[in-house]
Length: 185
Ligand SMILES: Cc1cc2nc3c(=O)[nH]c(=O)nc-3n(C[C@H](O)[C@H](O)[C@H](O)COP(=O)(O)O)c2cc1C
Image 1 (tube, rainbow, N blue to C red):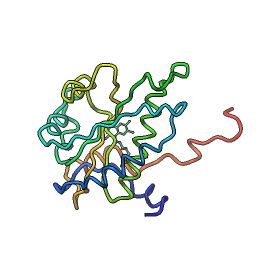
Image 2: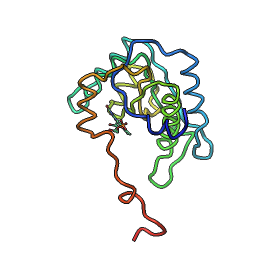
Image 3: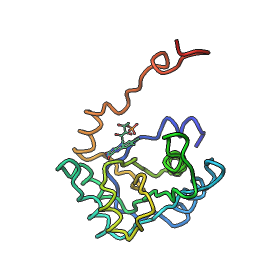
Image 4: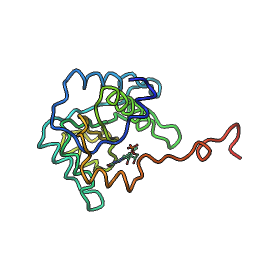
């Protein structure tokens, strides 16, 4: 797939087919993440690949602000947990580069997945301690984000369509609203 088609095709997928994802495709996605830029090339990212259906159901059952907002995650055959080893990155003032590095790497993975016909959805709605306990992640490792990885279902389930509608997912601010040239003022 052409790069700009990948950018155009990527969207948050919240309903998956049960088909397993071949290991070679998972590795291709991880290789794309591995090539991401990072603070002093520290490569602080760590990826945990979860394929156990019972564990994925437990990740999906977490309540955020009292609601299991990501319960749809149960349909995913694979969940990638993007973590960071903060000691291998840095702080720029109060900006934590471990989060920046890991976010860039995860987006590489997301775009590679799109190019391979796989769906993803960036998930920030999780409880870090719950995820740590469930997956045996040590306290010094930060959990930055999760994404399901799998073949998108032909038709998004009702909840996915609902989220897309309320988030107005395809809507983007125009360039005029987000870009300034030469100076801010
Ligand atoms: C940091 C971050 C956290 C997000 N957390 C969630 C989440 O917990 N659950 C969810 O369904 N979508 C989540 N999303 C997906 C956004 O809702 C989605 O990217 C946005 O609505 C634009 O839609 P699109 O990805 O289909 O283009 C998150 C996205 C980002 C970047």
